[in-house]
Structure formats: structure tokens, C-alpha cells
Length: 160
Image (tube, rainbow, N blue to C red; front, side):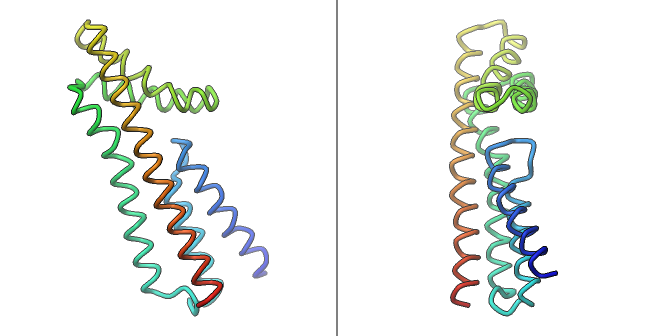
């Protein structure tokens, strides 16, 4: 039974790491869930409450970064409500268009939304680019957090 549970824990972590890049998956939550399951399998002997609280705080920071990076970059560029909505729609649409769509559809969505709001192509392009750069910065930060979480978990399992 433990082997099956470990397979599930590792699968949750692996899918979670992918989910940091793929917007439809709650990446950080899946990674934390896999870590929590792994700690439970080991009866919390090597990965205890202190470690889980620390990793939980990292997960919360990751959630905040996920929201803040794109939104703050777009707002700093002067995005309107339609620009932000366009970025969100572009992000969802990107899921269905493959890796290129996941990377570039938020930019396109933000630019289209902003153009509809202000009819200014140059401003729409700036907002789209700022949104895209914020999204990429958020992904890089979330990947760093997720790899730190997994690294701490593996070290605790190996060395208690």
C-alpha cells in the first residue's frame, strides 16, 4: 500500500511542477499536497510539522506571486479592466493552443482587451508586453519556490 501512496505523492509533485507553467493546474497546491501525502506516509517522522508549516508558507507566497506578478505588471503599464480580463481570457485560451499559446496568449489577450478599452494600439501593445513579462516573472519565481519546496522535502526524507 505504501508503494501506491508514494507513486501518488510523486505524481502529485510532478504534475504540480508542470502546473506551475500550465495555468489550468494548481501547481503549487499539487506539489504541497504531494509533500503532505509523503510526510503522512512516513508518519511525519522525517518531515514534521515545522517543515510542513515552512513549506506551507512558501506555498502561500507562491500563490501571492502568481496573482501579483501579472496583475501588478499590467497595472503598472496602465492596463484597464478590459486589459486584465483579456489577459485572463488569453491565459485560459492558451491552454488549448499548446506551449506557444500558453506562453503568448496572455500577451495577445491583454493587448486585445486594452485595445478594445482605449483604441490605442501602442498602449495596447505596451500593456500586452508588460502583462506577458509579469507572467514570465511569476512563473520563474514560482518555479524557484516549487524547486525549493521539493528540495527541502527530499533532503528531509534523506537525512531526517
